[in-house]
Length: 62
Image (cartoon, rainbow, N blue to C red):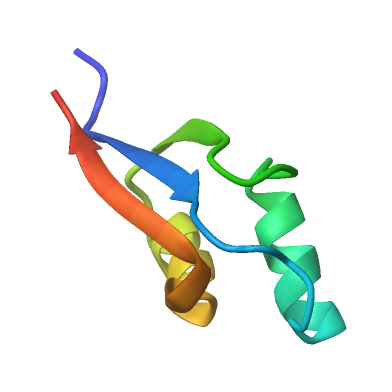
């Protein structure tokens, strides 16, 4: 049985973010506003989300 998943949505523009923050968002697979991706709930992904929480919306996938 697969582990829990996180649904991550980009809610704000990447304009104005530092280059490191922008790279983090792109590494999550997000390019456009309101784009949603699904990732496994791992420590690595949680750490990436913690670096840019002000531009992301995170929810648990059922």
